[in-house]
Image (cartoon, rainbow, N blue to C red; front, side, top):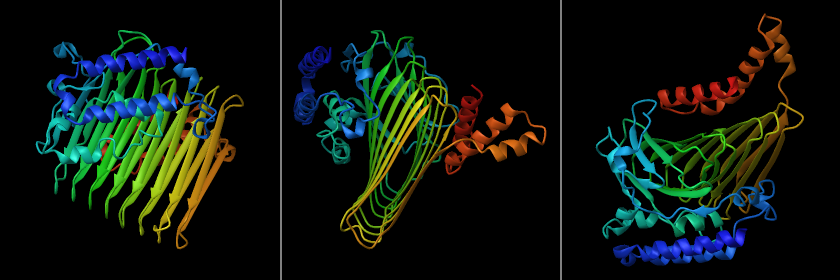
Length: 433
């Protein structure tokens, strides 16, 4: 079955390349061809690989019947774009393609265009410093597959710019062909001395199962400040492979929040590279899994240069027959002296049939560092539950309040009040549901 899918991918790629026309000369052709070759050599990952030990992606891959080829969207006017939950710069992608006609910007300084147009602009050197430079398309099969068919959006925040409104990245998918893999690519460049907030959501407009392969590359330049919020509140049958890759420059601060609430099978690979002196990053994650949901978070914080700081807090809740995985790795290179790195993973297991796996990792080659990590998997605090029930609160309400309190800590660091409230609202709805 997988061999048939690989053959179909090769045929779709050949057809796609034959229809590129002018794009054949923009230098992208070689990168796409090389990426496809890497993917075919790697193949789809299996649970035999350490990084996929608890995921078993074969269960998902065996259901994928075909891969969508990048193509122009004909009837743009018919795309129904749901309203943003609050005032935002709205960037719309439909089946991986940037739709300018459906996007709207409150901050006029924000620069947005399709990835294809950005790559064809000879003077746009920034895009070439981001595309396929931060994500690893040689070793990561899903990234390689995405690179081979890359289409998507290029977003740039100019130097010395502070965006007043968040950037709402809305990925819409329609799936006229059942069990088809959809892909999109998002490139973001936050220039020096700039500040911006992003939040990303994926929505399925169709009714059949949707399989998504998303790759995001972000370059945060010197003295920039960025918040990036990923909210996964997808359809119950959705399967999602996501890879978010960020290079953080000198004196830059990068914060990322990953909230996994709905979806059948979710895998998040988060790779942050601290590439210059005094770079800082904060990773905050929450996964709330019930029924038969599967949620897997792999994080990698790469301390390359000295005097950098990282702080990571991930929390998880699992009940029913759900399964969650947290794998957090911190690597400190030999030149990364004076590194300060902290990682914490805390989990609550609510049923005997749910499963939670946690694997914190430290890999340290420098000798003058301060690094720590911790991991817990436990149950709801029975003493706190008894205390609340003794004051007239029902057991169901007491449990919900305790879980909301446990989960909400993760999003309190979001600076934009409306976005923070929106995230808390979705978490509350998940708890009730």
